[in-house]
Length: 206
Ligand SMILES: [Zn+2]
Image (cartoon, rainbow, N blue to C red; front, side, top):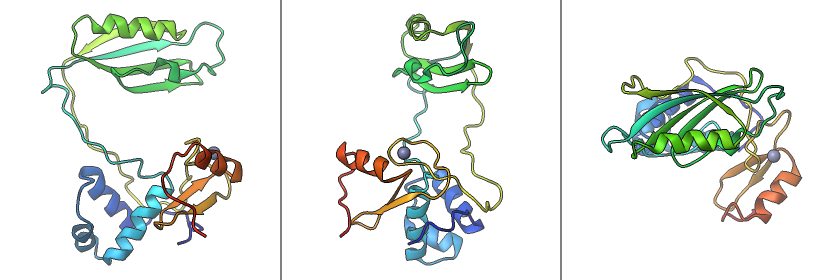
């Protein structure tokens, strides 16, 4: 399989739409729905994964049913920061999502906690990471968690490196595993680092 053509066609988009709504949909059902063969669907999914378009397959949990309290916490990078602050320092198990504008030095997190006092701890951690918390908003309504899928075919997709997870500019370095999966990397160095860290149980072909 070649990654030379890095576009996304209308069939890929249909497959993405089906998987985004239920990633456990059987391949033969997808094949029937989009009108291409089972091997073709399998090949397309493998390619969408290799490109990093499909990030994974996760269960969608309803926090409300579990009695979680939801907060939107708005924060700002410290005065005089150039936006290169390490935003990953904000991460913690209560935080579902982090949004950050490095240009503006402004961010928001979506946090969930079972403990009514838990939000104070989350705020403290954000401040400890060097950010200034501007506002903590309790959220009691959430509407529309529809997954986003592109509306039309795309001629080009920016692949993501399997090792560093950042966008690959230019030609990717591709590795084919024994089981037929394809991994893409920035270069040989990223690929070596990936296998050295044993991030994949798959073995190199040949
Ligand atoms: Zn890389």
